[in-house]
Length: 165
Image (tube, helix red, strand yellow):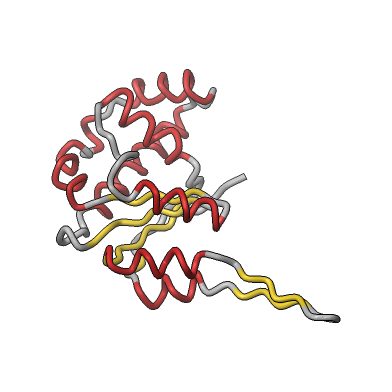
């Protein structure tokens, strides 16, 4: 099973409205049921869609933990944690928010050539049992995509949103 990893740049001031639009509303009538889901329309109108990973977006689960545990690159914690959790709860898929500060702290450390394929394979094998070369290569591609998209954050008023699902 695969999932797309979609990236968006948006103003941090839009996050409250994003949370409001993340909720799926079901209106039930006597003989009908109407589902209102404005999330994707809101994102489309209020963010910039960046390059996505169409293959297995699930590699970001391993990748973000690998960066944190093995490389001391903490992209999993920032001032937007509560918002990301609320988006996960409302949407039922993984959401990660990355800040301008994280860009400043870690962008230069996300050069794919700094990551040996064998090291990634070993980590993936121990972490998830997926130690094959193809998954490690996809992880390297994920690092490159994350770095490229993180570099698009222009100031402290912007965030990078990653949705895996």
